[in-house]
Amino acid sequence: MHAQYRPAAWMMYLSAALQLIAPFVSGFNSGSLTLLVFAFVWGVIGYVLLTRGVRWLAWVGFLLALVGMIAGLTGMEGVPTWVTFGISLADLAAAACLFVVLWRSPKVRAA
Image 1 (cartoon, rainbow, N blue to C red):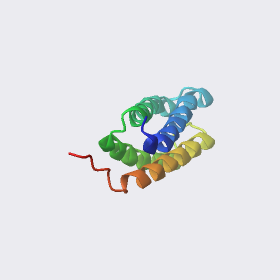
Image 2 (image 1 turned 180 degrees about the horizontal axis):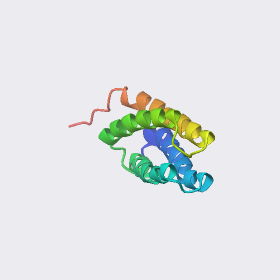
Image 3 (image 1 turned 120 degrees about the horizontal axis):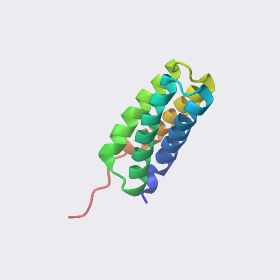
Image 4 (image 1 turned 135 degrees about the vertical axis):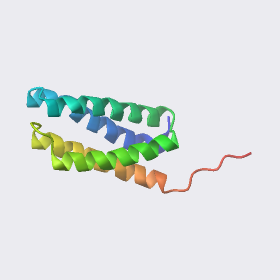
C-alpha cells in the first residue's frame, strides 16, 4: 500500500462512484452512459495508485482529473447538475492530492 497516493485514490474512487450512479439518476441516456467508461478508467487508476504507486500513472491521473473537473463543470447532457458538480469536486480533490505528491521530489533509492 502506497500511503502517499491514498487520498488521491479515494477521491478517484468517489468520482468513479458518482459516474456509476449517473445513468441511474438520468435515465440511461447517451451522456450518462459515456461516464461508465470513465468510471472504469478512474477506478483502475485509483487501484493501481493504491497497490503499486506508479509515479507516471499519477501524472496521467493528475491530468485526467483536471480534464474531468473541467468536463464536469461544463455539464453532460441529461445528467443532473448535482452529479456533475460532485464529479468535478472529487476530481478537483484528486488533482490537488496528486499535485502535492508529484511536486515533492521523488524518493531516491539507495544503489
